[in-house]
Amino acid sequence: MDDCLFCKIVAGEIPAEIVHATERTVAFRDINGQAPTHVLVVPRDHYANAAELAAGDPEASAEVVRTAAAVAAAEGHDDYRLVFNTGAGVGQSVFHAHLHLLAGRPMAWPPG
Ligand code: 5GP
Ligand code: ZN
Image 1 (cartoon, protein in one colour):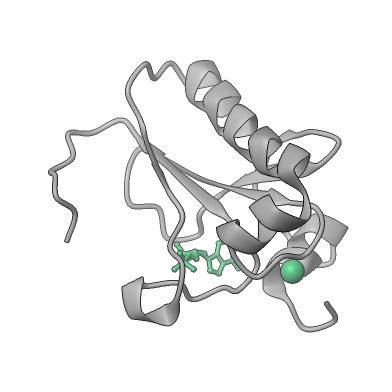
Image 2 (image 1 turned 90 degrees about the vertical axis):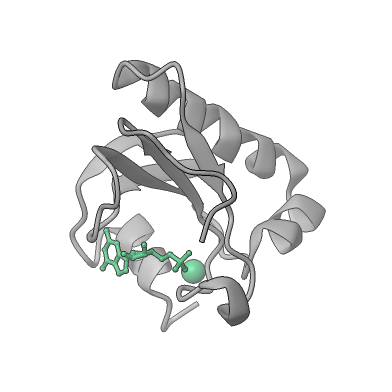
C-alpha cells in the first residue's frame, strides 16, 4: 500500500522506535503512549484489520500475538492488555492491522 503509514514504518521509510521484529511482524512504540509500555505490533504485509489478517494469513495473525507476548515479557510485564480496534466507530485510525500492547499501570474494565 503506497499511502499506508504502517507500511512505511515497516519499510523503514518513516522512523519509529522498533522494539522487536520477526519474520512476519514488527513491533514499535506508539507515538502517543497511553501506558508505560504501549507498543503496536503489525504484520509486515498490509491487511486493513485483524479479521482480514486472520483470514488472509493465519500464521502472521498468530505471530502478531506471540510477538506482543514476547515484548511484554521482555519489558517485565506478567499482566498486559491486547487490543485490536476494528472500525473508525471504535477508534481505529490507521487501517493497517495493529495489535496494541498496553502494560505497566492499572487498567479499568470495561474500557471507555
Ligand atoms: P488505532 O487508533 O488505529 O487503534 O491506533 C493507531 C495508533 O497509532 C494510535 O495509538 C497512534 O498514537 C499511533 N500512531 C499514529 N501515528 C503514528 C506514528 O507515526 N508513529 C507511531 N509510532 N505511532 C503512531
Ligand atoms: Zn499498510
